[in-house]
Length: 280
Image (cartoon, rainbow, N blue to C red; front, side):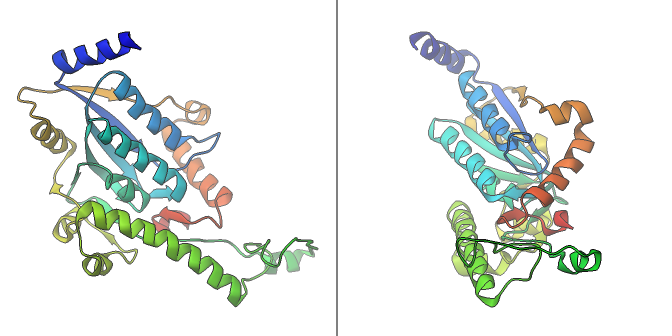
């Protein structure tokens, strides 16, 4: 314990020019086969163990599940509470859950053409009743309550069930709005103009006050150095999560495709902070 504290103190004194680069890529999800959130949180813990207090979070994600996004958001807030300065840098896409996560950072830098926004919540399920009817498959269901099979794929939702799911979406949407409102210091009436699920370019997001600056990853590093009073050239240390077995076997691009398919199948019916196009 004393040894670790001494090590952190030395790092703070002699290695204050270090900048940790942590990357969030792909769909934000967290399960045993695709522990995206868990691995990213480990990166923040790794940076803390090394005593690195300056972090650039590079985000290239269309969003994902609500719970996983909230876990990462909390990890960033915790890092800041422990003295870290975190700047988000948007790559090609940082939308929905990707944007939600960025609001936990001290500052947000987006490329001019980045796809961002998509502030909203979606629940989707597929109804294949007609297909089952055509091939002669029928079902019998025994349930403990009238809504236990609320997202069954063999029937359509009742009006009451639509109201139940809408209340879930509305509650989750309010959570999203509150985080963005408080982080970006926006009035609720102004935020609601832009938080209807639509997407924006980085330029538009800057105009609306959703990001702090338009620029590249290099610009995000410069902003971080300015915030942390780093005068000389920083030493960039890339902190990467360990690859999952799936990523090792398939490679990153195929892995992302499989993650997308897995999300659509395994998380159907869950509230998602996800760019809607990814579900098609």
